[in-house]
Length: 177
Image 1 (cartoon, rainbow, N blue to C red):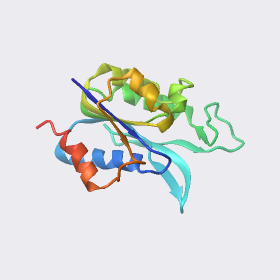
Image 2: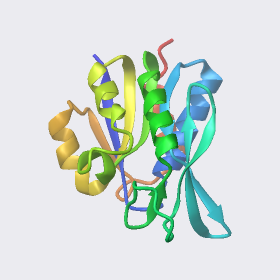
Image 3: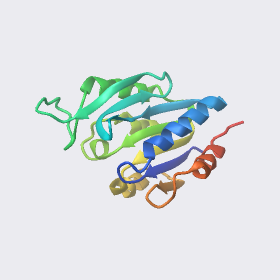
Image 4: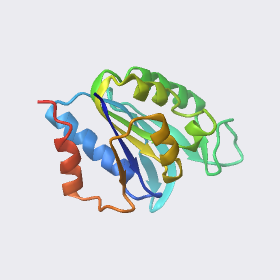
């Protein structure tokens, strides 16, 4: 049975960095990885954009930029999303499985409340066509996510330390060999 791990924490708690480290370790070990990660883009110490990284192909595209007067039709309070990149990301999510490790960073208010963003992530998680899924979820949405899926573990980076032992513990559970 597929294992679902929810990864949560406040802004800049290390959720995306943990996903990137798991992705790197899995690649180095020959574990089939699928999904999307959304790494932040910084200018100095200011977060100015969000990229979308397809884990099967390694292709990275600009997903969102700080909101300005230019409206794309897909905005949050802080970000303006590129609809073409959102569509591309959803297509890449459809192609993410089957895999050993599914990583989705993140499913947030855009997906849960507005049915926009990485909406294909819901069907991919429901498919169970992976050994382990690590899904980044906002703290305010954990309860809703645990109602949708049979979650084996919730890792709250506000309560645990993101260090090599946590990464090793998660990675040891992934290795299918």
